[in-house]
Length: 320
Image (cartoon, rainbow, N blue to C red):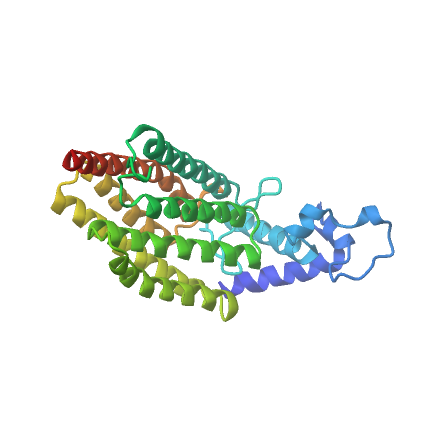
């Protein structure tokens, strides 16, 4: 690993000095990257989309040197290694991790479709309380917040995998932590059937405090990826086990979906923690986890709708 870093650093230094790498010309090295005015025409400056992505001479040299080193290793039959703490993945146009970005965007679409169908089911297909015109389902508001946080998390996941910068990384980690923390709250409230405000506050307050502290730590003290992975892993496994146990004990009509989602979620967590090296230059362990999230998201919203139908039917029968 150290030898690879030394080789790449030497390559980057030469690339920055010459503005080229073998037969590849690095056009970014023809433009100042320190913000000082250039003695060139305005049209020679970096396009805005490249400035936004923070692509400059150094970053481009690091990328091309990394890929050149990996090509040399592949010809020798060696496995990929990490550079600067990340796996070497090929770009596609302006997307740094095209497969992961596309899968995140697709999951975002699935989440939006699931939340929208849940909304339409509750307000246009199921009966409403005649006196207040509110839904009979006691967890409607909780699921709406869940949907918004889920869509926000997957949106920033797509942005982060398209453009890996410090601020997109922080937004991605922060939104994912907020989403997972709230998911644990929802799991506890629904599985324990807590419907009064006092009980909900008692459950939510400590979890919200912990997640908020964690997000502030990542953003303003240290962006510790290892710590964030441990926190998210513990929260994820806790809620998956809680849902699965509840589904088995209560024999919920959607228990097979819940168990499948819980099992798939745990497998996905371990796959990401295992950190599988990239294949074909585009697919790594993270991309596999993102692909798994698409059917799981669909099934999860399917469970939410069935749960709403079941609770609404049970309540309306009692009020008759």
